[in-house]
Image 1 (cartoon, rainbow, N blue to C red):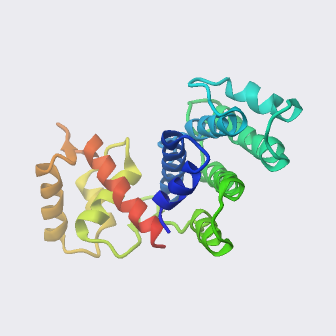
Image 2 (image 1 turned 60 degrees about the vertical axis):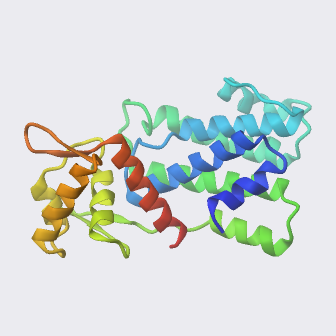
Length: 250
């Protein structure tokens, strides 16, 4: 099972673009949780898509800019054409995610620094919500639906472990893929070559130097005047492709 299979199932009852956005936003939350990076995926966008999905299931259309908190707060008291699993349970869990998004600094700078525990909680909540949504709309066999749920419920295995002075990237990856995932974990901060080399010290130093030059030549990497490296937007997207592929297979 892949994310496109989840999109296909949701499209049977939900606007196709909305279904695509919802699953892509879920996968972005998963990527950040797998790599232990914070603030890149938008929990708010996922919750907004959930609100729009509930609106579509209820009345066959959705608002482009819904009042998210107001909708989730009042939904269970409305005469909505939704069963209680969606109307009450999904709405309450989604509102909890939105509260974390606003109050726990997963997206914004605030009084409480973001941490991986908040990220994992939001990912677990997104898993439950998407699972409930799939169960509500699917007309597939129990076996097929079970495969979809198993894909959504894949546990997070750390792909990048931080040891303060260095990081270790796990997975059967090429040198280029490992460098992309490593630099993704630093983004949007810069990383020095010594940091990259230290974290990839199981590779030959010549291989690390060569792959960094290759990434620079492919415009996946920028090197500033101080000699520090940072993924370009294209490089960041390439890293996400690697991480998503790893996440889908582990």
